Amino acid sequence: MNRAAASLAGIGAALLLAMGGLALVDPSTILHPFGAPSGDSAPPALGGPFNLTAPDGRSVSDADFHGKWMLVYFGYTHCPDACPTALNNIANALDLMKAKRADIAPVFITVDPARDTPAAMGRYTGLFDRQIVGLTGTPAQIEAAEREYRVYAARHDEKTGGYSMDHSSILYVMDKTGRFREFIDGAASPQDIAARLRTLDS
Image (cartoon, rainbow, N blue to C red):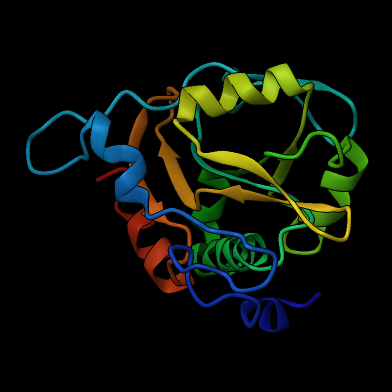
């Protein structure tokens, strides 16, 4: 999948998708109970420690990304719209960052550990950019990560016998010590993502 083709996959993360009944959630509805960052107010307490599995089978924790700005997105490899759009936009934003892309650690965490094996995550993220790290884990590990990030995710059974995953579509920006800095809408353009990332050290 090339980036231009992938960008056609989605229209918006907060829209109701007619296919598959996937309802994605506006970031403000997830973060509002915890306080959205604005003005001089402190950012909400989002994110935290996790222990997951990388595509090569290594155990990975949040601490492995300390020293870089972490851009975290939750989704799954069978996602029809929001995930390919978000990952494509992240990949293009990294290109726009040029030399500064080395300061960014983009992380894609599955909400569908039953199907998203380490190998599947590696193949999927590799379609977009090799810098994006796909992480999976046991259901308990994934649920723990979802709780830390206040992620909404729920299985949606289909009449065909398969299923899709309803999930929120948010990019979480974590600072170099692993603390939450801000969120970006999952449907933000590459230009908007890059512009936000360029201000991180300012």
